[in-house]
Length: 367
Image 1 (cartoon, rainbow, N blue to C red):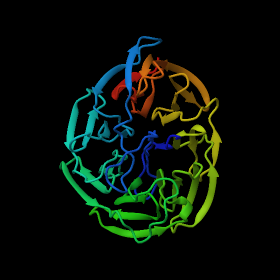
Image 2: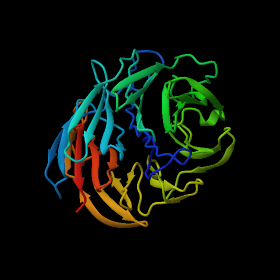
Image 3: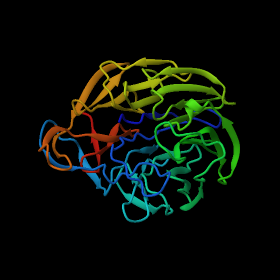
Image 4: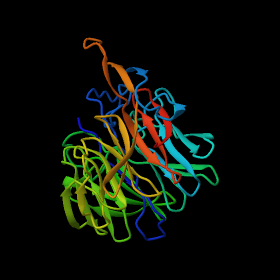
């Protein structure tokens, strides 16, 4: 199955202006065994054996070894920390913060959930609040007070439609906005506006074809929505009332919003939704904006993390080769470039990425 599309945005935005949204990119295993009806895909089969071997340029250093793959990294420029959440196999999930200056790590236990599946997204709002999505629970964390609150979303929903690809109504995407968060759910043709008090204050009904968005980007007068499973990776620009302004297939290069992980490769989008392809982009390439200028792109076919400035390729970091042992062992071993599951860049130009093959967080500076 193809990878979920990711969206990154950077910049300093005031109330009512366009907000940064870094959406989840989830490479889904074909073997899905949710233990509870309506649960999103489990991450238990996401890892396979790996034996890293040295090849090419040293890929920075390991900051943290994790027990499961993290698919979303959110950079908080105000606090100079990286936020992400790790799905636990046998206990509560964990929210992490990593100081990008001295790599100090703090851990916060997330509320337990009755449903299996990965923590899908982590977003930092303009007010500094961190929003996290568990399968059927929305979590709000205030870093200033360390207060964590949450609210469940129901398994059954009156507006639920018949599943086209995956059953269930779990939270599929969020967009942190000034004073709250916008929530999209799988198989529910509606966007829900939650206040900072975790109360749904507004509902925006959308076309059935756009239910279960993988990514959201909220602005003062419009919403950008990236369609979910089986929807052909469409970028949909909606008015604030849910009316469709434009819908295009993702092929992009623009200024603020970076799309990554789609079947068409890495991409960016202008504020009005216009799109243009990255040069030499490949399927499932990841991208993140460098706050100092340019775009950082990871190419899964070559294992290179490369800088692009005004669309032109620049310096690259070559990741090492890893040896993979597919489950079952019938195919023997496979050697390929290390795979990256999530990517972010801080304001100093340091590239943070999760190496998928051994579930480790790395930091590196492009040569």
